[in-house]
Length: 364
Image (cartoon, rainbow, N blue to C red; front, side):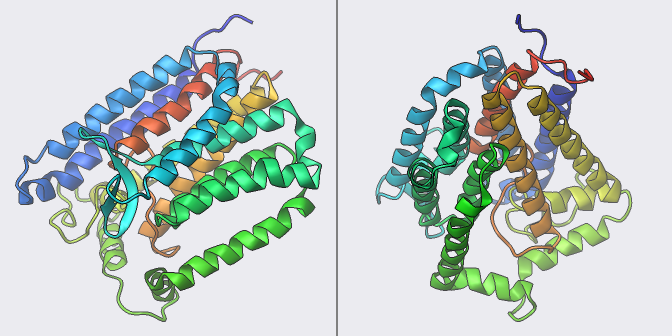
C-alpha cells in the first residue's frame, strides 16, 4: 500500500499542545531566569529550540516505514540498559539533588530513562508481533519480558527515579496487555512489583514523608499548598497570560512538574479544560490510529505509547491538584525539558507514519 498523508487532526492537536507549552514555559520562567542572573527569555529560547528539534525528528521519522524499527528494537533495549547503568557511575552521571539521572552532553543534558520508555515499548511490541506464543509459556514469559523489565526499571529506580521506573513499567505492561497477556502469569510479578515499590518507599524516608503528607498524617507541604493556591485563584478565566503570581519564586519548579498550576492561575478553569480536551483528543485519535494499524506491531506500539502519554498527563495533573502524592513527572509536550521533549516527539514519528497507511475516520 502506497503511503499517503499524515493524520492532520493528530498532528495539529500535537502542535497546539506544544505551542501552549512554549508560551507557558516563558511565562513561568521569565522571573526566575532574571532572578538567577540570566535573561528572562533564556529558558523560553531553549524550550523553543527543543520543540523545533523534536518536530524535525518527528517529521523525519514519519517518513520512515515504521516496520524498520523492529530490526533495531533489541539494540535499543540494550543501549537503554547500558545508558541507565552508565548514568549511575560517579563522574559520568550528573548528580543533582542526590540523584544521578542525567548525562552531561556539554550543550545540554540527556535523561536515559526517557529513551528507556520508548525502547521498552519497541522491544516488547516486536517480541509479541514476531511470536505471540512467548506470552503463553511461563518460562519464556519470564525470560523475554519480566527479566528485561526488571533490569530496566530497577536501574531507573536506584537513580533514584521511582516515577520514571513506574512510567517505563506501565509502557511495557501496556504492550503486554494489548498483546493479550494472560493475567494469571503476570499477577505474581505484579505483586512483587508492588512490594518493591513499598520497599523503596521505606528505604527512602522522604518518599514515605510525601505519602504521609498526602494522607494528612505528615507536616506542611509547601509546593502542594502553593499549587492549590494558584489553581484556586485562577477562577473561571484566569488572571491572564503573564499575570500569575506563583512565578515570583513562590512555587519551585513551576516550569516543570507544576506547570499545570501556572496554566490554571493564568487561564483559569477554561484554560485547564482546553488543555485536558486537547490531550483527550490526541490520545483518542492515537488509539483510533492504533485500531486501524496494518499489523500487530503498529497496533501494540501506538496503543502502549498512548497509554503512557495518558498516564503521564494524569499523574502530573493529579500531583498539581493534590489528588495523588507528590512525584516528579513532567506534563508531556508542555513542561520544560530537552531530552523529554525530543524523545516524546520521536515517539510520535512512527505513529504519524502508521497514519499514512490508514484511513482513521473510515468505518471499515
